[in-house]
Structure formats: C-alpha cells, structure tokens
Amino acid sequence: MTIRKPPISGTDRRTFLTAAGSLALATGLPAPAIAQARDKVVVSWLPIMQTTALYVAIEEKMFEKANLEVEAVRFQAPNQIIDSLVANRADCGAPGAAAGITVLAESQFPGSFKVFGLQGGGIAVNRINDGLIVANNSPIKSFQDLRGKSLGHLPGIQWRTISRHMVRKAGLDPDKDIRLVELAVGLQVQAVIAGSVDATLSLEPVGSIAVALGEAKRAMTNPVAGIIADPFYSGVSLLTTKFIKDRPAVARRMVEVLDQATAFSETQFDKVRPMLPKFTPMKPEQVGIVAQPYLRAWKDLNETDLNSYQALVDVFSAEGALRTPMKVRDIILKPADLGA
Image (cartoon, rainbow, N blue to C red; front, side, top):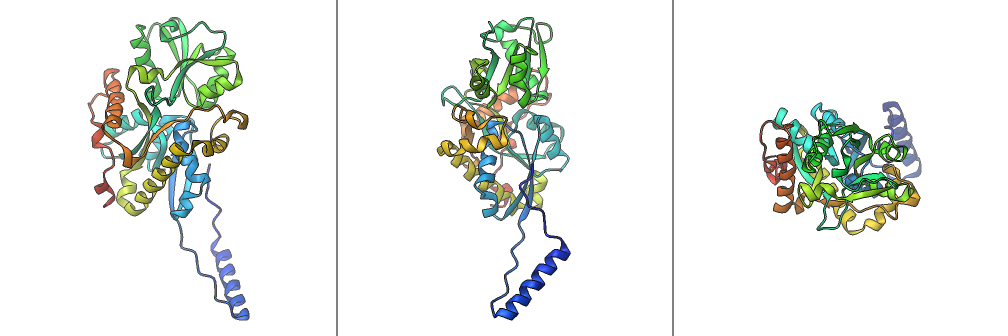
C-alpha cells in the first residue's frame, strides 16, 4: 500500500508552471509559489491492531502536516518487516514491528535499529493484545489442552519462539506434544473454523473478528501477559540507524508524528474504529467490538515498559533463539541520537 500521489513528470511540471506564469502576467495576479518538496520516508507495516498509530497518522493527514511523504508498504509476516529494514528498503518499521525479531536482527547486525515505541496489551491495563483462539465447540480451554493438537501462529521466529515458550510453560514438549503451524493474520480465524488447526495464538484483531463471526472464541485472553510480562509488548516502532544518521531532522519528525498519533489512538479510540477496516482484516460491522491496543509513545516509555520488553528478550535467550544476551535499553532511541 502507498499513500503517496503520483509525481508530476518533469515535462508536465514545466508546462504547469509556464502556464501558471503566463496566466499571472495576463491577469496581473502573482504567480503561484512552488510547493516545498516533502521528505519521503518508506514505512513497513503489518495489518494488526498494534499498528493503529500509523493508520491514524495516514487518515488524519499528520504526515502531510509534517511535510512528509510516506510510502507505507504492507507485509503479512513480522520477519518481512525486519528484513526490509535490514536491507535498507525501508526507513521505518511502523508500530507493531516485531519486538523479538528486532533484537535477533540487532544481535546479528549490531547498530542497525533504534526503538521509539512499544505496543501490546496487558491484564492490569485491561487491553487485549493476544488470545488463544478456538472454535466455539472446542473443548480446549488452555495450553495444557493442546497435547496432540495443532497451534497456529504468525509466520516467523518471533511467534514460533513465543508459542514454544507458552507450550513449554504449560508442561508440554513443543517438539513432541504439539504441531506448530505458521498462518498469516488473515487466515487464522478461518483456519480455526475450518478445523485446519485446533487453535491459534493470535494478535488482535483476530480475537475480535472470531467473536464477531460467532463461530470461534477466545479460550484465553492475554495468555502471554500472564506468562512473560504484564503489560506485554510484542510490537515496537523502529528507525534504522542509517535513516537517523543520513536524515536526523526527518527522522525526528517521523517520531513526533507517530507519538502524536499514538496519543490520539489512546485518548480517542472511538474515532479510530471507523479507520480499521481499511487497514486490517475486519469488516465495518465488526469495528464496535474490536479491542483497543495498549500503545506507548517514545516520550512516555518508563521502567515498567523497558522491563517488560526485556522479559520478552530473555524468553528468546531461554528458548535458544538469541545466543548473545542483550539489553533492550541499548537500542532504545535517545534524544542525542536525533541531535537533540
């Protein structure tokens, strides 16, 4: 998906300005000023609720107001977002970029990223981030009931690692007692309803869609927060360090816009609901029941937030996905990084 308009070609631009100048001479009116070119930023995103701040920034035209031309590229798997950033095909990972994969990539390519926001949910804050989704007639009530069954999750190492950890904590062997299946966001509810998998560990809005369809349900709400950390953040907002180094002023404006959009999302979520069908796999009639995500702006990050993120990183170490221990505080954006 892209929100930028097709540029005027060089010939068309010259023709337009020449004609405008001739008209001004003929009428005595001043010639129109040439609009200042907007700074282009490529943003990678995933169609989940954690990405809400991006949806708000687009629909409320916050990027245009900040003189930014944003090309938003949609992906279906978390690892694809990080791959696009590592390859310098994108400048920014929208809110909802994979928090765990970010750390894995940073360990492999040190100095690649800076995190400037966290997204998720929690039990104490009463915000739904994830759920164990099953068919309405399923006897499954928890991860302990998954022995000999299949569990779907988002593609990539992040949710495979989290799923393995959740299964292990339930007393099962993720290599012997269960079959893990990778499923894109838009396929998860139908896979449960059709019986292709017995359950899914899904991010919002999958759980809300399941409830709205009336054929599937949340067997557990926020199970990951109950095991890893509460609140639990599986999403982050990212800047590449190349983007920061090459265009610090533009990077600063991106952070400011997404912080503003995060505040809007947190305080005016009822105004956000009508935007969601344009960006996520939900229908207009389903927006009234969708769960509000828990979004943390860069300026609001505190010790609780950073400790929660660290807890996720420690899971990756415990599961063997991350071989070198990492401190999340080392990759959190600092004012000095932006020359402030």
